[in-house]
Length: 151
Image 1 (cartoon, rainbow, N blue to C red):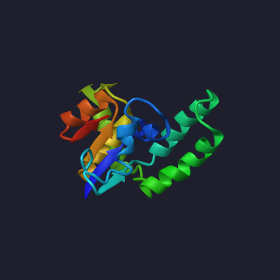
Image 2 (cartoon, helix red, strand yellow):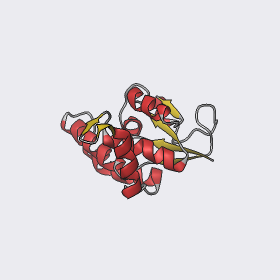
Image 3 (cartoon, rainbow, N blue to C red):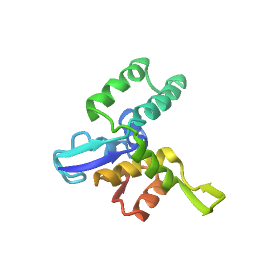
Image 4 (cartoon, one colour):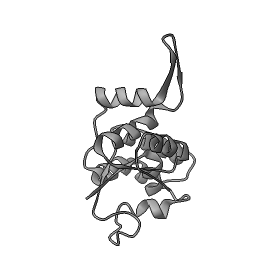
């Protein structure tokens, strides 16, 4: 079984019609194994449903999605993932390390968003492939030895 860490940009493609949505939806039911190894295990940190619900709320306010889709989104995500990886101390510490570059004892500078680094850190911890639509996030993950796929 192949493990995939799915970030919010991919989960949103399951609800919204945008570039890459058809490919992202294959993660949900790709019995052919031609694009994603089948069977697979989908993983995500506990922040994913928060990020997805936030964006879907904005899309509802713009009239892009229905109220039923907005309200049902958390249940759908729970059904897809079963559970979400807790954001524990180790995951936060690893994500913080990836997110900030230390210049000296007195100066650090954020180089990448810590939320995105949580997905990379989870992929590292679970020996999983990261699936994202964010090229910068994929580049950072690859720099740290994480297999990635950009949709």
